[in-house]
Length: 458
Ligand SMILES: [Zn+2]
Image 1 (cartoon, rainbow, N blue to C red):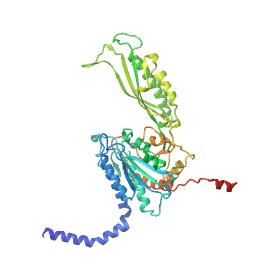
Image 2 (cartoon, rainbow, N blue to C red):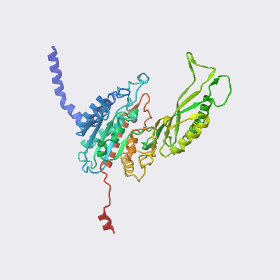
Image 3 (tube, helix red, strand yellow):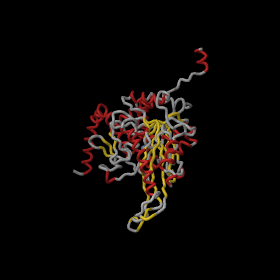
Image 4 (cartoon, rainbow, N blue to C red):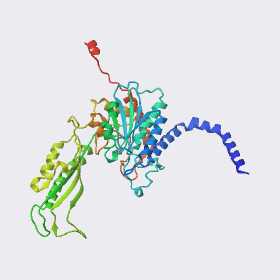
């Protein structure tokens, strides 16, 4: 048999089989093929290596723009810094004058140590249990694509759905290195101002329990360096006020404070995000020698660096007093100047108010969010403060409510860890949750009583 004949016979057989294939698709495979294509889109996004220090932002942007065009969303690429595209998508509402909804996610991910992973971190392989392994599967490519899948769902299946408020979706660069060239410039931009944003959704954390976690604020970093000085001397001599001794007293004082905060968490009195955390990041002391350090010399300088995280419900001013009086007192030859903070983020906004989003019925968006999650058969935990930093702070700084939420329940917290994964069922459920949220948010119209209504009531 020639090759051509063989191909012809195969083609004929396929044609004969075709009708039954169609029947199978129509009656049996519809839902499965739907979720298969949803998962394969997620895999494609995860397979783009956007890890620092050289994220492939261009490929991520191309992918997002292709998704946007398949959804008929308006799109624009903003480049506040060259080579760092921010993709902004828009679904215009029927009442575009109402404050809009912004769904934010970052496209970058933290670096990986591939040899410590059981699955290659940018292959997005799925194991037999349905876990999708990839860097970014939790933080936070899941959320970015879930927003789009929810929109796809609302546009296709509920063809009648029309948002009243305009929905924006932003994909920002550089969150993992501070967001300065991404969300920070975006939140300060004219484009952002003109978007008239009323509520921002941004990232949260996975929850090992059966409920989702919602974040209304985050701790602000203070990176502190304290420096001790003292007279140098022979390594055999006991005398007061050496740099090492002075620094050790401070470290002991910091350690006691750290323990007191940690005890509150261990006792269940406070959540992790509600206490001030202090962790030593470096110790720098000693007089170097070709073989290590000079051993018979007490050095004249010693330094220690601390990563401190302050929740906006804490008293930042009293912490600063503690630093000046106990951790780095001038009386012990310690220096601590505000200039020695490598980073210091205020817990107050431009108007001097603590940077937090209302997390009770005083904020209608909070109630709508909780209600929408419950409606989608999800559970919600107690409102929390995010223990680290996210881009949400740049929006809160502008006085705009921002809620941190990544729909991942029954999931171990693996952001920035090896073998980061998300189960595909959990991912699919998250899309349903966002469908519910978008319906609630985009249909929300505040009943504002105008003068005429008041007159009628009187
Ligand atoms: Zn993140």
